[in-house]
Image (tube, rainbow, N blue to C red; front, side):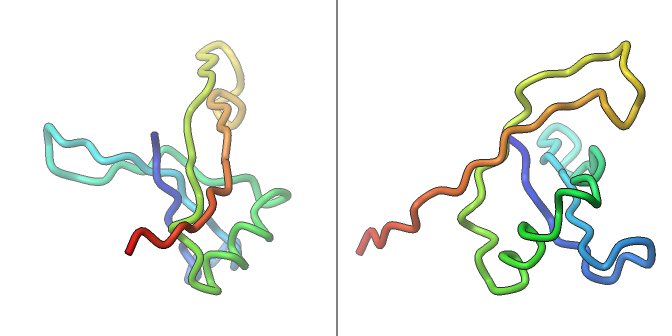
Length: 85
């Protein structure tokens, strides 16, 4: 699993959403890249509205031979927000 991190102050894309993972060995967050500009509008809007915790993001394929911007394929799922109280 990886995390989606909103980067609203990105000077190149106001809807920027980073894809990151927690490197527990080095205790740091590592950025793998960004959701493509053509596909990030709805995700950014939902995150800006406070719904960051509804997304589940997983890497489902890595193709090291592809162009760097095409190497990682993600699946982003919207999960139900169930009150566990």
